[in-house]
Length: 150
Image (cartoon, rainbow, N blue to C red; front, side, top):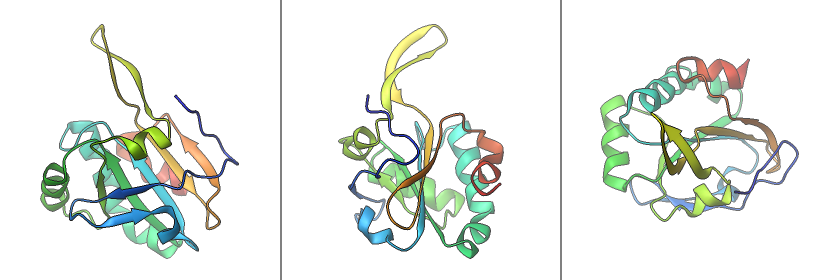
């Protein structure tokens, strides 16, 4: 698992969103980009996290931020999740885990005593020049926006 940290250059990713549109790091040049990785669409923690970001979306926009959610769900699962909760930001359907692996957030996890591989809920804040300003690995799903915006 690659461990990216503050000051590293963000991976030059490319991935498809819920509408089959391509998103690349270069698309966000000149903006701050929040890339948040979550384990699974429509689960309680992921819903709380994405809804908190949605509810604070205007604050992000007024501070020159773009948001991009990423999980290994299919495009149709991402589309349903986005539509159900009216998210104003794209959700990448990273089924081949190319973006997930580029950011190094796939690896062993434990849940109820069982070990398995999965996505580590992690958020990367990337500055206008493509450098990682912050890595948040202890995501507080219900107040995540304030962890990013302060």
